[in-house]
Length: 290
Ligand SMILES: Nc1ncnc2c1ncn2[C@@H]1O[C@H](COP(=O)(O)OP(=O)(O)OP(=O)(O)O)[C@@H](O)[C@H]1O
Image (cartoon, rainbow, N blue to C red; front, side):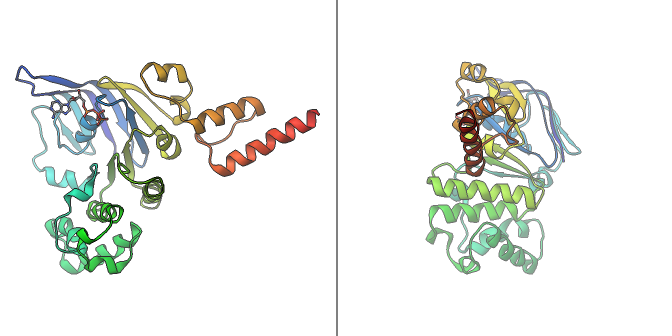
């Protein structure tokens, strides 16, 4: 399911003296099956943009096409519920939205609400709890007896239980330690690959954008400043610096190695293995000259 923004403007409190334009002239397409990162400075419009992805917000002008649905200022889909099922949003600190007595009930809440039979919902909960990296015995526990990281995984399983086609992640690793961050990012990447889930990641981490995304949308002052592959977006460090963003260190290292070695390293971001290999090549080249 493609999502296309056409000349989208969004003004908060449009009819009041407190009116604030958060988006303008946003023209961008998120193609089905892609992993897209949205980056940008605080206040650049990322969260406002993401709330248009499943009709939580309506554009003030312009149109958002989500699959077969078109949302404009005067046209909301009759039923937002099916849209919410197709586009699942994991908001910041999703664990704050857990409320049921047991983990199983929390995960089953969405499917039961959509008329899925109880046995089927429970079967799905068992499958999902493993998919998010927890063991089945967690299902009978209270979500409030779990660690923060485990609670977040349960909340994510709850979003996945509706089998969305598009998964939108708003700073999903906020507040986690470095290990927890990496595990969670790897989990989303695995989900994206295994379930062919279109994934939209809103992040302040340029490293994560470089590491996981096929495409990066750079927001600046309410509009799309740039959209392309990580390679394209990180090509000009000075232009990014002018809007307060920086090229990740791993990408800088890759660019330097490519320049020194005269080779193209086929990934936007260096992994540890690629770094070791590139440094070995550099040593070999230097020794050959000695
Ligand atoms: N509910 C609201 N009412 C009025 N103005 C808002 C509201 N939400 C956001 N804004 C304003 O809209 C602009 C864009 O905000 P938005 O939250 O979309 O940016 P952001 O890039 O997600 O920022 P951050 O990285 O801090 O989350 C900002 O100027 C913000 O103050």
